[in-house]
Amino acid sequence: MFKVTQCHWRRLCYTYHPVIGWWHIPNMRARLQLGGAFHLLETNSIGMRSSREYPEKTSSGRKRILLLGDSYTAGDGVDNSERFSDIMESRFPWLDVMNFGLNGSGTDQQTLIFEQMASRLEADAYIFCLCPENIARCQYTCFPSMSWSEHQLVYRPKPYFELSENDLELRNQPVPHEKRSVEALGDWKCDFPYSNEFPEDPYAIYRFPDSSHWRLQKKILERFIGQTGEKPVYLVPMPMDRHYFEKSTMEFILERYRELEAPEKNIRVVDLMPAMLKDSAQERKAYRFPDDPHYTAKAHQVVANGLANEIGKYNSDFFLQGSQ
Image 1 (cartoon, rainbow, N blue to C red):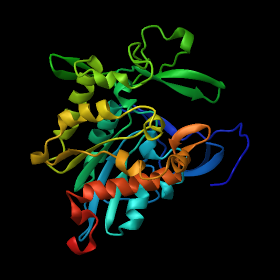
Image 2 (cartoon, rainbow, N blue to C red):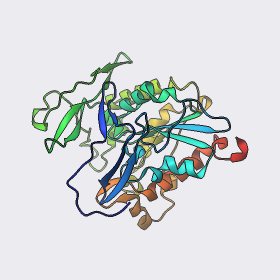
Image 3 (tube, rainbow, N blue to C red):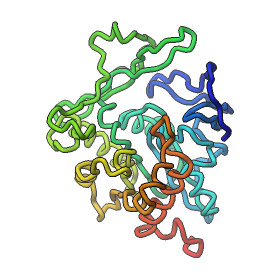
Image 4 (tube, rainbow, N blue to C red):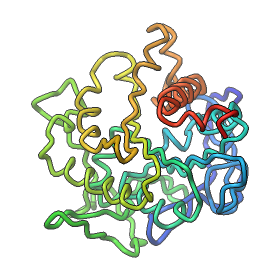
């Protein structure tokens, strides 16, 4: 990456998708700005943010992990090669790490990405990277987007699930093309569930296991897990800056996701906080950009280390060449 001071131009990197809402433009190379620097975004022929192609079947002698998540997984702010998925690939040459992360997406859209495209690619294990905000995005019916032709912020519809009698019903299908200004949102929803009871904790919604937000999030993840063919599934809550700066705890976030843990079925929750707290408080300041909370290249290295160490406890064959 190289430093910039100001940029008034933005490359359009996403296209409409009737099921998911938006998806990367395939076969693209774009230099984008974030955090006071440019980074290179490359996509392959199916629109994954990836600098390489992946065949549908696993090649002989190789292991494959499939990743789902939002911008922290997709790698906002860093080059493809600097993301934790690509770091793991370069560190373990026999390992494929297929990164289907999508900016601005919720757990609902990430599950739809799996169903619509990622499930076609054979994998030996699945990692679902769960940004704490994703629990709220599942209740959004729209998401903010910059209209570069109009030079203004607009809201565009997204798919969402409704929980009805313990079942899921998918709404906004196909995703409408309509857009609205913030003043004209009407019945569209895009509000994070801040808690007046816990003003110091923006993710306090995780304290309430009976909340509509958690019940929906849990049901969507159960839907995903039910489609993985009993392959290992790792649920990875992604620490935010307030967590690794030790301003608030991840205790309740981890507690909620552990409701889904089932070691006998190879479903486990990975806690990345021990890996992130190995560095000093001063060193952890370099985990985010000065003007943006996304992970820097340094943080991606820490996440790669944490994932390899924790998953290696259960599936050492992913990380030990002699165990192929």
